[in-house]
Length: 250
Image (cartoon, rainbow, N blue to C red; front, top):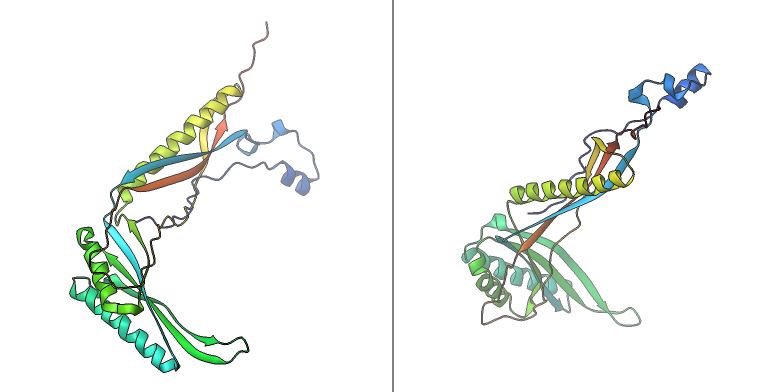
């Protein structure tokens, strides 16, 4: 699945040593006296994007329970009972405990306008990872039915569990896109591309797709359509520009 990717610096851009030499030696050398590798380099900096699509193989469902009562322990006990029934229903249907994760446990008070407490609301989240997409709808409706009126389904999203090959292809396309742009700019400037001096990958944002909030048990499976999952790679690349051609003197 598509997770945040660390930025990947490849090469460090060239810098000039002229200012440092001047400060240390009190001299003002001409640029020609500085080694070629330390001289400033003209560059072209572009961003490239590559996109591929694949068929999702995993569904993640964001379940929850929410209960209210006059006493805090009663509200919490009701939430615990409903959450346990939902968890047990999912396990009985074939999910493992590794596919389930408790989250967002909260207890809040209900107050009147003058601040007097009138009751308490307890809530628990339960995230389920479903690998059998053909049964996803049945699993979700069964869990909601088990949780009763306390059950919630806050959203679902699809992903590809092993997206390594797809991301590799997306990165290749992103680099090719960046090169095409850089070559265009170099031609317009009357130059040609030299070596790559920097590559970095832009970290993507969260691409999860939310779903509806179901607040009651269901008698029929929740309809699901996985569609296609788009994976995008975006990179920034800097190329050195070759020196402009000189006109020979007659």
